[in-house]
Image (cartoon, rainbow, N blue to C red; front, side, top):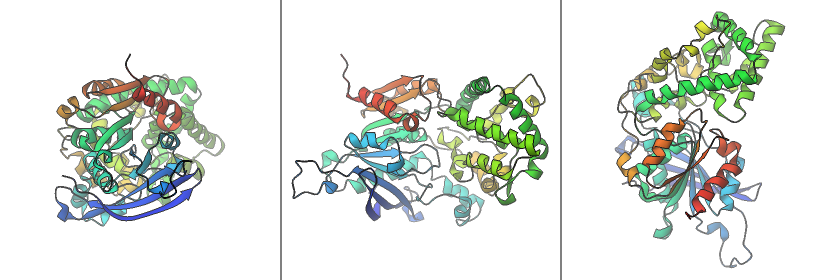
Length: 461
């Protein structure tokens, strides 16, 4: 049984847009199965509309009214939440009458963040790897349940349940929540985040490589001039990247393989255009100066978050639910897809050089400054045998209303596997579209939220 989180601090302030935002600090066990191992700090921001209805009694404070809670679970893994006032979806949900809680998942943002230096304080590499085993979705949802109990302690029993909304990896967490703690949930909204329930990371990457190949083809169809630009850049980086294109004070380098990881942006609205801008800038450097300038390298660095959010690289393959080790799944399966072997395609004028996507490769722990210091930890985690994250039998008898947006052209989360999961979860209603991409909840918030809430509020005739 999950105990309520200990509330350490709560401070409210007003922000533009007629919002009252409260900053919350909580304390929870690092390991719920062994609380004696110590605690970690969690951080979250809540938001509610700052308004006083005309008929509100003078004797009551609207700021203290018990509005229904809605928890936002961020995509990732390893990324913190933006403040509610900066999130495009928040206004829609506040207008629906919720108060929102945006939680920095454990290890991110202000929630005892994981970085190379913070891990080093824990001990040697084996100790660090053991510590990181507590930062998957199973413990994230335990944190959420502990926070729910703390925030609703004085609520009447019928109002203690809360709603959750999960984007991408946050959707994965939502399905873990439905699997193990459905008693805490009133309803669940999932956007681009219905995970495969079985099969592990090999199944995921075996479906991802072909989707990414298609997305590369679409990129070059839109920007055919970039075929030779990318080839030119990759040739330079293949020859000189290690020696001449240094990053972050010389601790890492911009290799050809690292540059091609920009393809992770292909799956978002506007992603093709953002990558084209970086390619154009880099190629222009080569034309004018014969090398990549520091400003250009900085632009490329800012487009890659592997150093600032190391959990993504360390635990990405573990966010799927294998009953075995991941053992560098994306790297192993790469051999099946020669279109992504840039060492070969860069020398063949008849073939474009393809970008990779959200795959995690061992080489990353040789080129990214923060990851270089975590190479042994990454190897230990790649060989870890992870427990399951979902209870399929519980999901088959689910009683919590679930509303999911799935995107036919989602580059990150396979549509067919998501559809299979939707069919498995009892009572799951889906909004399916081929007009939106994976980040629609932020890029096209009003459209996708309106569709999901129509799905919730409509009746079957």
